[in-house]
Length: 241
Image (cartoon, rainbow, N blue to C red; front, side, top):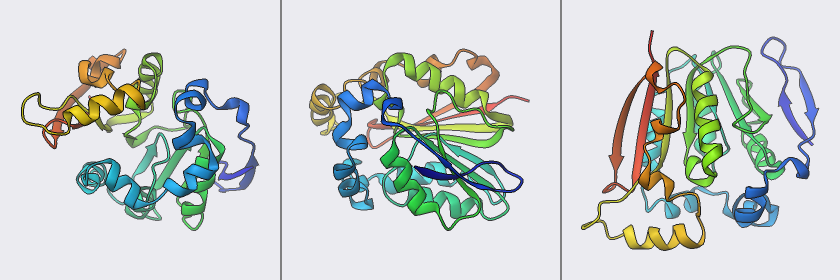
């Protein structure tokens, strides 16, 4: 059972059941070791894990997201992230803002609730990223290292849902993998092996622009920055007025 704030007016604490049968099959089949099995999740949920997996680029990547947050903003992060990122987001939003964090696996929701329990501005919500609909739009929506972990059909659904939930002139930020430079990025070969054995949905982001997953991409202005020799990308979509 996961506690979360039910609505924005009275912040009533309610109990919500996140059943095992609601976990997407691809998560159980491919990422049980990383995101579903509590034994491994509690071992992995540390800043050191994030920094190691991101080749010591965690700070640079997280700051691409954190630097877009201003006090008082409404922010939605579409999935829990290991380490202290969610706490940093809640702190930056401040008590005059609101931070919605969604996830669809019980252990991830438990970890997020443990970190955010003391923040009145934070809501931990049991929901698939492709299905969540807030009662009012957000100033900023973020997918941090998520898209490479979902199948192609889910990439389309998640991107569209994120874009649907952002306010006029609001921003949607995607921080994720990208195709590394071919000739001088030494981690390219390592990532090819990782993709083959552990990240079967990741290679698509080497081949496709994130905006290609959006049904109504023309309603947004798109900017892309590549980081660490092309290994990572930060894509920002700003809803046009």
